Length: 280
Image (cartoon, rainbow, N blue to C red; front, top):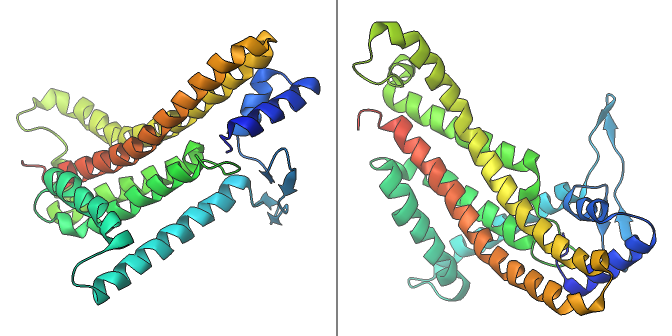
């Protein structure tokens, strides 16, 4: 979604004159759509597709989902090739090595412990995919794919399967689910504890999805709400304060974009570590 203040103000003015309320205008920019928005230049509408009566149309978030995936693939293909050619990483390779080492030494190794190497490719992919998606959403005329609950839910489902597969491979099928129940629990409490622990398996990915979605959506809503204050108050004198606060939140969003990629990856690795090393 576009966070360029000038374009946002022009777009707001046009839609306010057209009778659209402030809340409608904010949701127009936050929600997904069947077009690419280049306001005030115009919109490019995407094709409508159906398969056996099911709507499979390409939307704005799908387009930028593809862009993020392609960008992640291209960047790390180049980084991998650079490692093969250079004994000492330089430039872009050295820049991304800082993040790779950080995920390995500060996230995967401490939270998973022994055997973390098996899960490192997934954690790195998750971290950089979310990071690129978050930062791409800060570019004018783009869209923040991580503000779509469908995308964050799929990421959380992948983490859910990584947790279950890791726990079952290490402890065995029955051993893993048996290990979910704490030792020394009285027999009459076992049925209740079993239900609670099974529910806990699903609340963890749910929390992952909602946390990422809510944080990335909230910041953008605040920015658009601050800009819309100019037209709600119908005073040009409020514009310096409104735009200034919006810019402050925008720069804060840069920190949030990095922080949310870290939190999602860290919690995923923590859940994996808890499943793999149940006795520790």
